[in-house]
Structures are given as structure tokens and as C-alpha cells.
Image 1 (cartoon, rainbow, N blue to C red):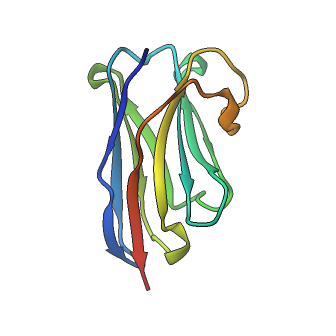
Image 2: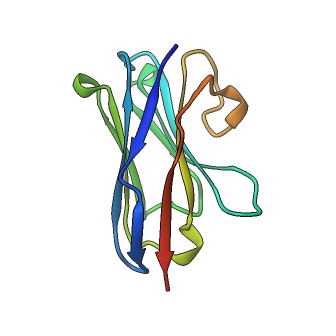
Image 3: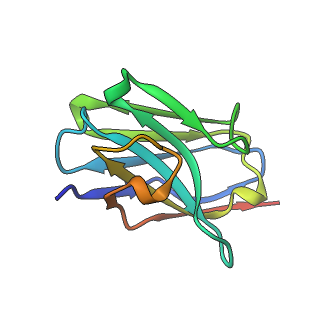
Length: 124
């Protein structure tokens, strides 16, 4: 059972930046790690993913391409989400997730393990 703990959320003004971290309880070099978010009254949506099994391939939702960057440090069992040029519509609870076997990193049903979430609020 992989434990995932997110951190780094907070309140930021539009145009600002935040970096989220997701610390895993075990080595993640064979996993795909993803970030999802859920805003009040909306469904959970894919944000970004990184697939260590695919030599570090990254995937992004169209809404965050060019603004967000996912990266990881296998030595620290940690995945990061650097968020720049934040917009009020980025306000949501951000969740880290992981799976070992699967092929669709943008689909939440592929993920076996989830963190508790961290709140990101972007003020206008």
C-alpha cells in the first residue's frame, strides 16, 4: 500500500506561482504519478502525469499546458507540480495519485493510490 502525502497548497494571487509536492512512502520508479484537481461543484479532472515506466514521459491537460510542469525526484520518492501564471479557475483541491499497471495516465480510474489533497486558492 503506497501512502501519498501532498503539500505546498495555499492562497496566491492571479499570475503567481506555487509548487506542490507529493511524497510517497516507497520507491516510485515503476509507477505513473499523476495530479488531479477538483473544484467545488465540479468533477475531478486530470492535470498532469509523469510515467517513470516510460522513461519519464509527461502528460498535461490542455488547460495547464505551458503553465504547469510535473517533475520528480526518485531519490526522494517525491513528485512535484510547479504551477505558474495561476488563474482563479485553477482554484481546487489538488490530489496526487499513483498506479503501477495501466496505460491511460489521464484517467482517474487507472490510479490505485490517492493522497488526501491540498487546497489551492487563486484570488483575482
